[in-house]
Length: 232
Image (tube, rainbow, N blue to C red; front, side, top):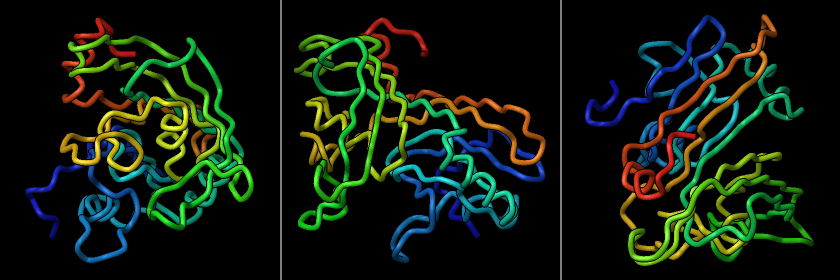
């Protein structure tokens, strides 16, 4: 029985092959490592849909679109689609500071940080290839943002490494607001300002293109109004 006090993911699509959800921040996308951790997205939906398996991962603190397979065969097909680049993903983040240009690409290899787990780090020697495209959408200057500049940025992860967007933005000098691992918000209580906003991919059986969009977290309302920016 799922604890009724826990937030439930929002189902945005379901058929006999897939369940696509809008995952809330704080919910693991795969089974957690200890009994003290909250249940993962598949466990939260098991009573409604039966056995599910995430075909990719979102960090626990990241909200947004997560694809769950209803059969092992669909899990394999979707895994190949993600690995081969057939899945288009777009994230939004609110970051500290201002981006150095309107658009750019970060190509910096990433590896686990053995001295500070679960952190990852830019590691040109032992790291795995990691590429992120970014686009600056809007900025908020000074005190209106709580004491410093902030920016709204769209992100396209070309690769899918653990913590990739968080590490790349921190390396760029613009860590994500609320990031207790890579930013100045070590004691922050608010959620990580990162959402898996939109996704497009071919259906694993019919091959027809599917497209989905996640909600912007309510906590972002103040930033979006201050930046005078609509929902991108």
